[in-house]
Image 1: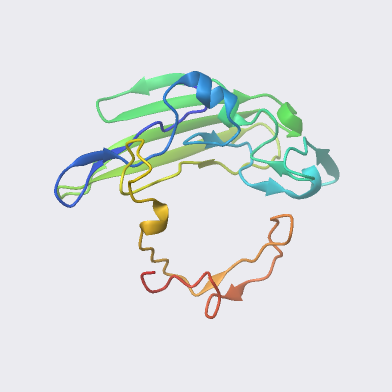
Image 2 (image 1 turned 120 degrees about the vertical axis):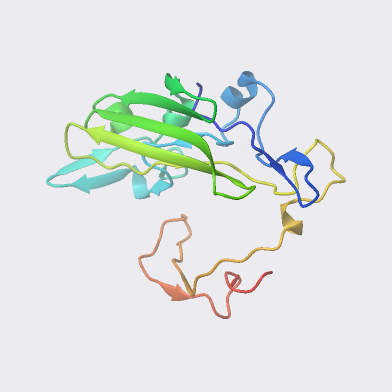
Amino acid sequence: SYGATLTSLFVPDRSGKLDDVVLGYDDLASYEAHVACMGQTVGRFANRIADGKFQLKENEYSMAQNNGTNCLHGGTWGFNRKTWEHVRSTENSVELRYEAGDMEEGFPGKLVVHIEFALTSSGSADSLLHIRYRASTDQSTVVNLTNHSYFNLLGHRGSSSLPTVLDHRLTINTDTFVPIDEKCIPTGSVEQVQGTPFDFRAAT
């Protein structure tokens, strides 16, 4: 499995019509050619590491600066560009595995990662998508894994006339947010959403 990628997810709308709500490409070559992580698993460290280096205990580690001066999503050849091993699958789930070597992309320690995609029933007519991560390492390291899907809950069928994500109504139940600097690195402060463009406490 290239990138442990969620390529599609079909869900019913309010009238019961199924549509794919996950954006992606139609073939493997397109996933390999594009740098956007469309539905892929990113790591060893998702998001940005400032100046492509970090301090851990008494050691400093450096990695590729593939986003300006930052290391983004684990470097040039992050987990989204790796071939994951199939472990097992059932009617409603699949488990994949990837083993990253010590100092791969500059990160210390061998890291063995398992990811499970599973569809489960919530006890009603609805099903839930669970993405479960499990990782083990043989020495101190950093790890931050996530799935990088882009969603359009209205579905997509290749037509520019269809509604886009900008036609969604969004609610985020939080009073605060973490601002970032000009390099998209968190500043470390926590600020109130009130009076900012990030206030989605009411459907917007």
